[in-house]
Image 1 (spheres, rainbow over the protein chains, first blue to last red):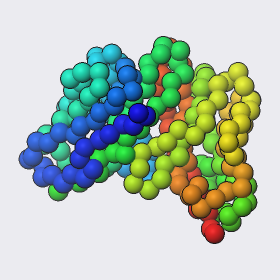
Image 2 (cartoon, each protein chain N blue to C red; image 1 turned 90 degrees about the horizontal axis):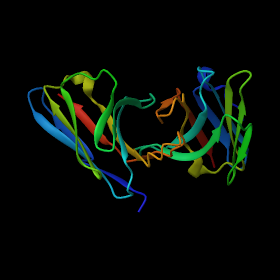
Image 3 (cartoon, chains in turn brown, green; image 1 turned 90 degrees about the vertical axis):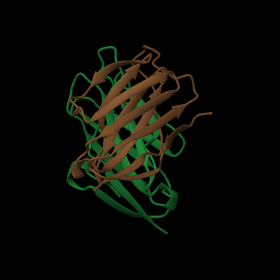
Image 4 (cartoon, rainbow over the protein chains, first blue to last red; image 1 turned 30 degrees about the vertical axis):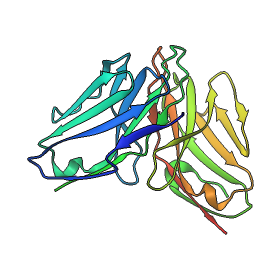
Length: 115
Length: 113
């Protein structure tokens, strides 16, 4: 199984809503990532979890709150978002072999629209 | 067909032609480079990678060339097919023990049947 799954595929929310994005992998990978991708732009790194601990937070606003409940799951909790937060949110995982050469596997993304 | 990547974000080719997608990277300390393909509505998909101690690596129908002198990376696709139509991103890993690739701008490849 070389698949990263993400739910939901699409999400529309208002600025006062609270919602969560979910990501799951069963490849035994120990590094998981959240990226944000605007249309026609490259993915931008938001967070990295390594062995279930947050290792990188790329100065992301606190209205985005990541959570890694276990080694297979990664959540992104959303609260009080702004319309400019509308984007494709991608989850990825990699083995975290420590060799600095690690293939990332991406999920299909969640298309988020903030009204 | 050839793209200069940062200056020509769209490359149109005919089916069967060879395609060349170029990428200029920024950091001379980068030690690992990856090409990703992103089809519409999907996440990026790994195509091929190359370490900084190599200058060429071949896969199935794809070849990556690395020129560290001018900090330039290219992806060559042989006998391009309509299924190759996608946005292609190069990514560099700056190293230092952690694997955090930084994505380049991307080039849209359009293959005409």
